[in-house]
Image (cartoon, rainbow, N blue to C red; front, side, top):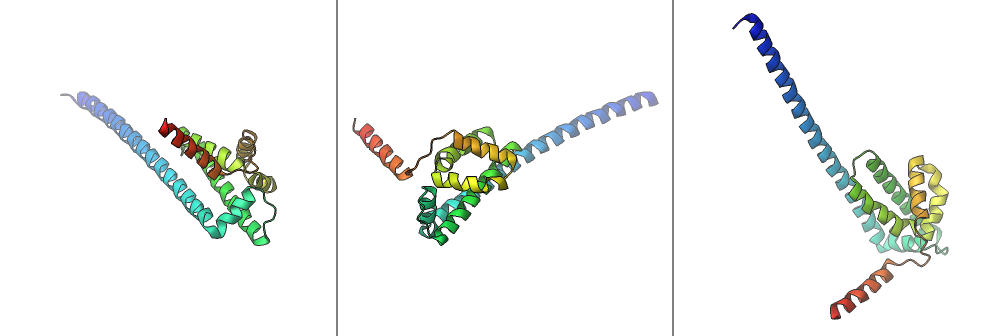
Length: 178
């Protein structure tokens, strides 16, 4: 084998090594993307679990329920609690919206998130009123997103998830008896 043949062989081996390295890097990037998305989803789940636990606490839940329903007889302390709980909601929603825009939350998970925003947050008169007061403190893209959620659902002045649950329960019992 001549020196020229060895040089050509070494170039082929080098090219194969580069291709192999690129494949390896591509697989690593894919794995890192999957890991980042999973960590983002877990982080968001933990945020909302902590938040829901807080509003499930009678110490704060009453303030949120009254404020969200638009009951204006809140005391100063209750309004303060409602105000900061709504700010936490808006911040959590903006964070998730941003993460979706960056590709860290997939479309299917985000679809469920949007439905939750529309049905359980944007439909409440007290939350809408508070949004109108603090809207300017959030990013323009999120402002448009949240405004769209409000526009897409009718307001529920006497909204009660418990009432919806009770109606669904009656439907289930009726279906079970037929």
